[in-house]
Length: 259
Ligand code: CIR
Image 1: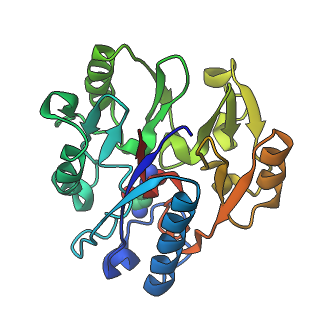
Image 2 (image 1 turned 30 degrees about the vertical axis):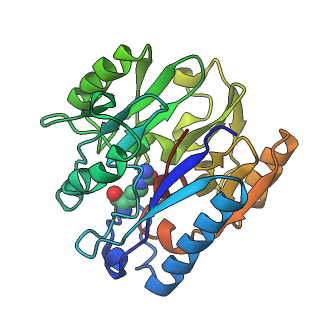
């Protein structure tokens, strides 16, 4: 197992008004989003993960995307500083959940003018963390995050994010030097030392996968990515993401994962 615990937050009815900067596929259906979320939790549990479910927050449409207002590692956690106004308050609303698992000395914060969202943070092996310089994460945020990570022996490398929302919307790490890549990250010099698993054209959304160490969770309906993962020795489990994808949400953003 690569992680044993996860924190999620049930979507509120307001999820239908989540930010949609990229997908442009209409509004999510709340009941279906709720079902997809419940199925996601059930799948994590089936794979042996202990899930803490936080209550819905009616005033915060994107608050089910808990990956963005915090970044968690086994030995420390960072409350981030989301860039968009409607997501700002999520940082203080996730904090009590983080405090249940980490003591004061292990919790750090990104502060203005720095902005950073967890979707841009991609840890790989050897204490290296890639952080996307994106529409949501700025250089000041990366500088603050690097200083925090250095206290725990980790090195941060910044990577530009030009065509997608967050770094992990374009690439996710599967372990053993295998990096699932799509779009702007295919053959990218930033990731030339990895064994690149290249997502076929038209299946970019499915680059956002979660390797539990006990199988890979991937979005349902992407046969090319399923084949690619299976050819590389991964067992796959599919999760329906139709409603979250309408508001630019991927699988990783629905949980915080740690030991
Ligand atoms: C947003 O635009 O902030 C949300 N609608 C989607 C956040 C997705 N988060 C992620 O990929 N980590």
